[in-house]
Length: 223
Image (tube, rainbow, N blue to C red; front, side):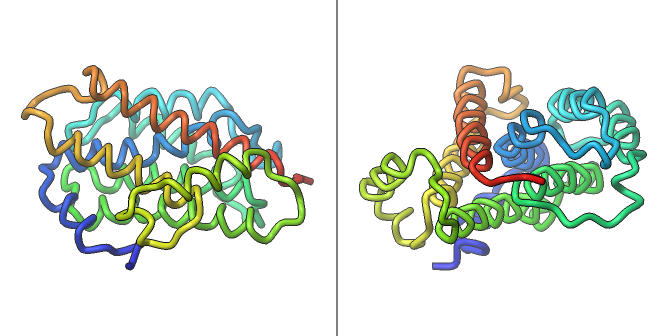
């Protein structure tokens, strides 16, 4: 099964309205929020942590698919960092940080239109990062804490997810993604999903997953 471009997964996104697609983007990037906010960025990138906090706050404030001036201003402020005028060779954790920032840039470009293809691009990017981490864990000689728990999860995961033949992080990401998309599709029109009980549950799922990413990324040395 093609975990990157599975027709059934894409069909879920296509059934969403514009606000739903914005929410799908948001929850996908929420799963990358812990690596972005909880891991110190290289000093030479010149990124002010307050600018990151500002971006994340405004990025979560309006999820209706419409242009958002405060969010755009926060992204513009972040984009003035020296990082964006130089070439970098990111380490594993830094790759997650760069991809998260890039994802927010894609959200900015999508606002006002929010097509299925634009939404898919961000969701697939998060899938690919999860698979990348699985490959890194498989190929390292270092001990990445939680191996027994990850193996136990894969041994007991539901057959539809097992069919993709992926490692722990990619499989778990698809599970959380599916929960998010099902909840978005089931929500009544006009509901502020992240503020609802169902939305808070999704936020907790995404944040738990993000903390697992941070724990695994911490096993890899940084210069």
